[in-house]
Length: 287
Image (cartoon, rainbow, N blue to C red; front, side, top):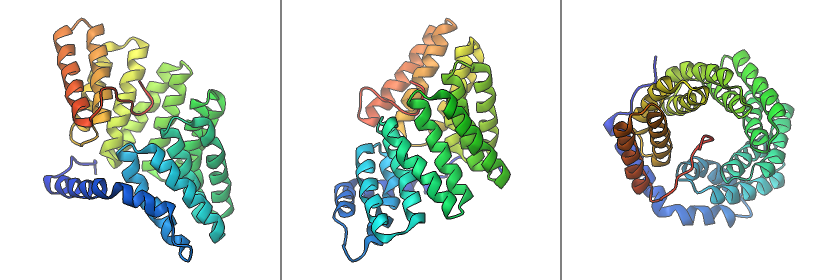
């Protein structure tokens, strides 16, 4: 079944949960960094549960800090599976904090630990993030190889959700290497998989598809992709993503001479910026 648009009741529950996390944000981060010496598992568990909130609200340095604390706790616990999970989170947090070179070590370690505990999905997840770190560190060929490895792993496991993420990330590496037609093909495959499994990631892949098509000079097709992405992103309160796609749409429309429509897209970006509480938004890997 295709992933469906969010229902009003689900949005209300999610908004209430985010509001609670917003009010308790500082206390929760502090609680991880001052863990109970007799119960390190509690600190690790709290750090992992906070990760999605910190990512969504873009508190990336807080995510790095709680992940570093959790990594030290897992070493005290001598729990390789927990350490692998925490290292994967730490690498992801460092990526989001624009520290890709630092992310390579914990992600490489996470992949090795997942291999040692016989967790093929975890290993694939670590490879997927490692490929991002390699690409953003300027190591394009290793990044391509790592993402292909992750894609093939998830395909072999029948894991279509994670295979979609691997296709998306492979597309980013191909795009960075200037191989725009191949990148567009990868993003299209990611869109097919995400249409079935994850509406938010479907919006991400449509945005990236628009960027690859735009780089190819296929402006009208890029406009179609950006519009579809924007419709999905506006269903949620991730205003940073909305800003990015609205600005991408505006540039594509300007290139086709549709200045009035481009101005409308810029206005949507400005409104989303105001909602995000920022004047400059960076989200994802296409700026």
